[in-house]
Image (cartoon, rainbow, N blue to C red):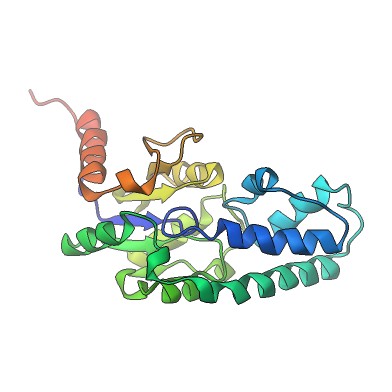
Length: 228
């Protein structure tokens, strides 16, 4: 079976804006009397803005204190603070190995997609200077369910014109790995504490075309019927 596409998560895979998200959420949380730290922030990786806020409210014992309209206002406040920090991103903010991998995939005719629940993904790609390297970016505003639901990855596959079984998904969050597996894609995990990834690498420094190709060949040689 031929590999036709590779679909990337954004934060923690292409670049790392987790610290920018944390600062924005920390400031908004403080305004409503909730304290969060970098350890708690790990729980917010890979999930939507509203889902992140709900976890923060639960953490602070205030899940029932805010109406839907007030929650939306808090999310907007967080996003405004976060967007204001994105100007600090440059091509130097791309994680190690990613630029080379994107160019290698394009040289081999493999389609490249993005599956990020961040509504700011286009702004981030533009700041990094790599928008032209992506064939399709799944628009998070068009999905109803955040990761671990597979909806964002299935949308990316449709946008690329491929089936999930012909694609690899790359994630650094457990919710993302679950989403990749749920739609039948091959999963690559970046990080030490993930489960369910067929290929697990400690960082993007080890992520390259040769490893992806070897992983794909191993998957499909193992599932191929034996020749008589």
